[in-house]
Image (cartoon, rainbow, N blue to C red; front, side, top):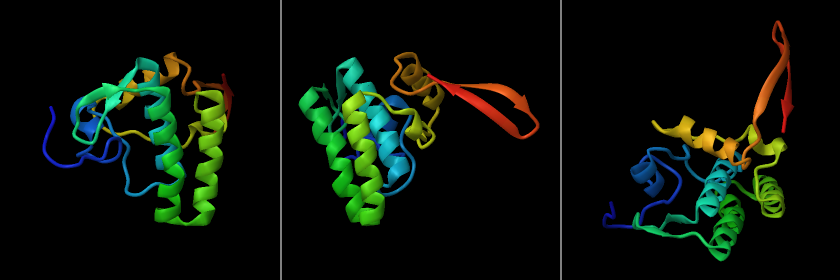
Length: 148
């Protein structure tokens, strides 16, 4: 599966994740939505103990690598979108780092694409890395939800 050149690991249709897992983070650059989506895949990788490098090779996902990749989302957001967006990304990163899951306040930002996206989202929810939202009391256009 390895190919020549430096691959983006999580983002884009030509990323290591897209090629190996048939799912990826859409978009260009790192903002709150893409950072939260990448963080969800980082948590998945940490839970299973492996990830991909920039050449698409399977490598161990250690606490150190998880932390490095998670905290690198902040300078990327600063570079791509500026201070205000980077502050939001920093707050999300700190919350994920502290809880080792995507907090419910950020769950709405997780967006994945690809043919296996539903499988990956179910796995994240099953492992309680991503909150599961259960609609309740649905009346007209108003819905309340319970998040665990």
